[in-house]
Image (cartoon, rainbow, N blue to C red):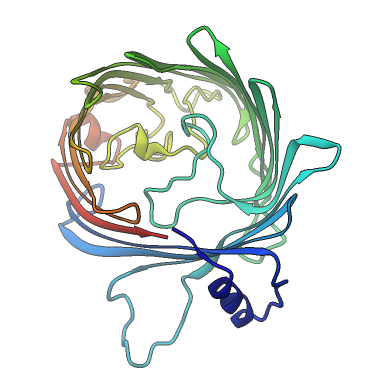
Length: 398
């Protein structure tokens, strides 16, 4: 649902703008509080905790002319009760610009769309560049994105400044460049080919290339296959790392159910001090989608202390009613390279989520995860005992 013209104009006027009354203006928003319980809350030696974290977004989208649009999105992320005194604390330190961009399509290059500014970006399955929407703050990039479409092929060109040393809070420049191309109608599915290049300075020499292929097909049997290599230099050392991922699934019960088998392999390092980096980096991926809902492996290689990751998983999805969905996932996590660990097995994890959609704008989600840790999990500094995580989340969008 979108509120039009009068409300949008009122908000623009409140912000000090002078909109053209003939242009199309829409207002978007989201309120998403999520209660969480974690035991333990810290990786090692932590106790239990419960909290509610809430994301509130408000956005304006204007179209001054048919070829040009402008999108501005403000976001606030906070824990309930974090203010010391609700009567006297007027600070707004969590209010920030989440997205703000202009998008142009038209002229002689009608097949090309340019997006300039702060923007969310998700490429393919979001293994390497994703919106990270599950996290309360999400993820957005500053820079330029070009999207080209010709027939059944698309290509995305990225040029993002991730960090800028000109800012007082940043010590080094960090950049991300890339090309992500998709060709549809390759056999029963679509083939993606991509190249990403991330670099950083400030005395830490990183000039890393990530090249990969992804093939996806849907139907009674569906699947995803992805292979990626990383070369160049990371933190001053030559890098040679890779990722292999595959999942195959099948629908049943008249498309009311789906079961899939997953296997991910992210290379690791046996000898981290040998002057060569062999552990794969997931860059800016949405790890929550792939490596367990308890988020023990959200930032690889840091989450695995450089040992890499093997993830065997079975994922089941059911839709018992049109407005209810149930998902159950079982993971077995292990190191790709054991090195000095006493065992390569990290942990097993069981995730269960239930979603009730009351309307197109309102949904309720609840979930439970149980992580059964092994010695390898404690030795990499993640968990020294079993973990329980539960949540209840209300999501309102308009």
